[in-house]
Length: 255
Image 1: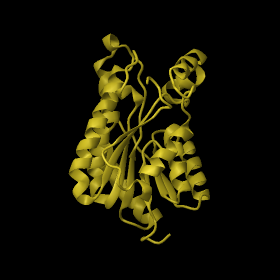
Image 2 (image 1 turned 30 degrees about the vertical axis):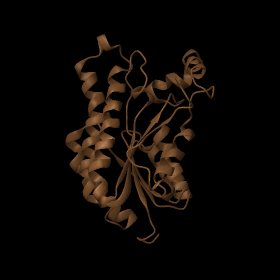
Image 3 (image 1 turned 180 degrees about the vertical axis):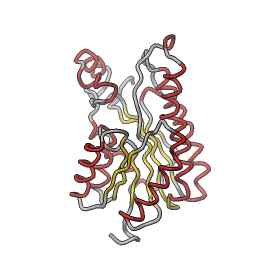
Image 4 (image 1 turned 45 degrees about the horizontal axis):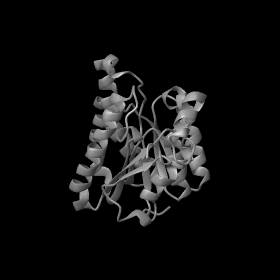
């Protein structure tokens, strides 16, 4: 692809679950993808191969979203990969998706658990985006991934939900301050999704799945392919005038 037509998305946590579907949806729209994985290189390589089969360039990098001290080294690796694999110096779309689950009552959540969630879901989003700005093209897009748990509350999700609420506020600040570079910033908030996230409790526990399905207007929990297309849309020309918005993709849960 020529530099003037190639668009590139960096998708953190793109080797599995929602991130995998985001990468596949983006590549299906002709957008090249650079995904990250934490530990499962084989899964990441499978996503890269599938994206390449869609006719785009793709690559994967190891990235520990909870290790903020490693971000400078990661950005150096991104720069090298952009040059060596994609033949460019900058990318266009940043998808802040990497995450981990925590189900712990408020009264029992430890400081260590709290710090882990905040480092990955809030502090990491803040500083990865900040450090990416020099290599993010003007006119680009940032999509932060939140959760329905920032709007409604479920016992056991106080740390996770409040971290996601912080990301939603941060999204508006990013949009305000990056507007001078024509960079738009939006947040996508999935509801319960049947993936391996959190040990697969929504996918594999019939009682939890049934309970959440009954609370949802469309009568089921989400699937990964309910989310990826929305992220790809926000990176398209059709979404050029959408900015600083929260889009909940949850089938109408708790309405």
